[in-house]
Length: 238
Image (cartoon, rainbow, N blue to C red; front, side):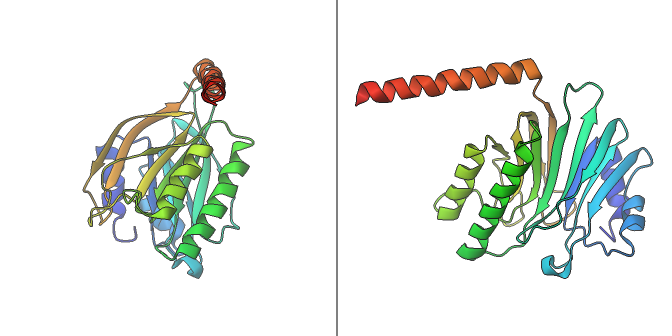
């Protein structure tokens, strides 16, 4: 982002974005605030995570319009990924949305990926205790289009077990794989588009808002009835 401050700010204003989630910002602690401020329109705020050398100083950031109220949460003890976490609230929303923007280094050994899956699972369990509406974005460096890989199946099972949907379906990288993801739980995602934009990673555009409480309650009730129906059917088959 150091040499793309104008491009980033123009992307926000030109596309009329309310929120921009960025990964691999490559910001340094001593200059991060200044650089990100130059990359942020006047009517926007931002939160950032400046990474340590463990992650190659990649960094993550969330820039958001002042029509949203934001509060940063601290999760600094992650060993396999880095993230910036913000609770966002809009006056038209019944409830806030916990927004996690994440970067995982491109380590592809089965051990490192499974260590990530374990730690990511712990994070999802932890945040789900207090927050109903959650969105997770970022560069996971997992090629989720390669279903033949065991760890991809494990990742998708992890998301399903924790109640998360995944977007997009199309490639997000210049080499043709899908690794930049939007994960949502009790958050409605619509109009997902992927465009080749300002780096080797494509920009993923989408609209989102928390599921209204009455609709979420109905979904929970329908889910319980569905599970009970499955159980009865299984018993009848036996």
